[in-house]
Image 1 (spheres, helix red, strand yellow):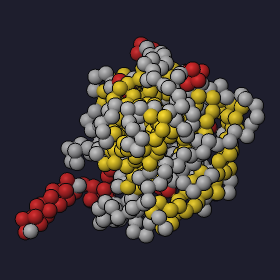
Image 2: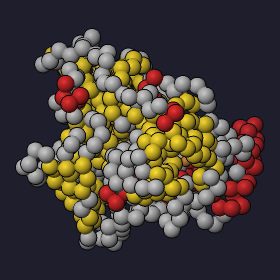
Image 3: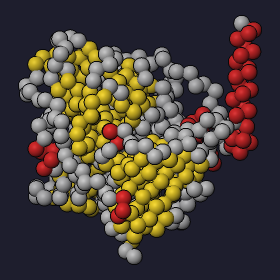
Image 4: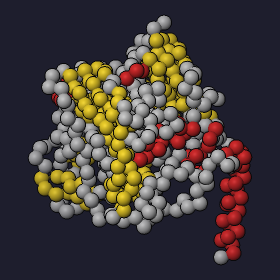
Length: 484
Ligand code: C2O
Ligand code: CU
Ligand code: CU
């Protein structure tokens, strides 16, 4: 017993020593959070997986689409019988799926009915001009609305939308504001893959929360959260704890979004089942990629095909994160259609490195409340980078944050209004599932990731760490794209 306490005290002293600088700087600014223990007392009667509804397109013209979204306060039972205060789009938690086609002219009326707080709606991964992008400059006051219009000019993809108000993104997303945004095109039409939404084409929005004993979401940022972002201990899929999904003996297409504030997932099936990634953030990969583990950082998406045809009725397969099971597939019945795993999916024209007119460097630095990019914290009144319209650039993103002291943190880099191709990670070719379009990519401590993109939309855009607590603390900058 005594030996144990010596170990604990020693460990604590080492931890304190390690975070001494943070302690000095952060003292008094943040409440510490004494209880980091897993809240294992939460139990639910296993619910079936809710499928977010497809949002109705109110424009009858097939080349145009019009949607209406309302951000609102609500309550929801995550733990049976206990009401949690939430926010949702058109509902009590998360939002509907917006589905559009390439070439369509889209108009979205976004109404802010939140209680006394500003919000914005940002189309993560969408290539549109800065004034339609929904960053922190496009604040919607409570009671007001905002109606951006844009044309879909990019290939089929699983994108998403979420709020982006200045220094309040983490809290609003945590409370439930997030939804999926699908783009379809000739390629997604022609591929012989499951596309019956909610039946064999199912979205999984994976998030992690911490609950207080009274059932409320815990979002007081303790020291650990300020350092690493709010990493929940209770996983939700489409807004429920421990759901199950009935699947036929056949191939299912799962569209995964890591909608967490800060958690990085290592996803796999309990039986180590093989699956095939067919799309990354910005659309289909050239070829399907066989894997049995998928790393998904905050805001990243992946579409995977999973073959359940070798199971028997009643078999269950668990989806796990690093060994922790959080969702169940229950095999039942025959599949109505017979799909095969396609080998070739689409053609992605590689951007020629020689086309790049400039290389820019972005360095994640600092830690805790001092996190920054290139030594600067976000300032709404400062444009950090000026990019010429229609040019190609190489962006080199490196992670020097917290190095030496805490061993560093992984930071997901994201830029608005553009999709990248990853050139290399520390000089090595990216893994096969990062050879398609990416708008968000993890940068590990000490690593440098090189990516290339062509900037075809004008306006002011953000680049930032997608650990939302880091973003809110200032690990963000602005770039302006304009004619020379
Ligand atoms: Cu998911 Cu600044 O965005
Ligand atoms: Cu974004
Ligand atoms: Cu970060």
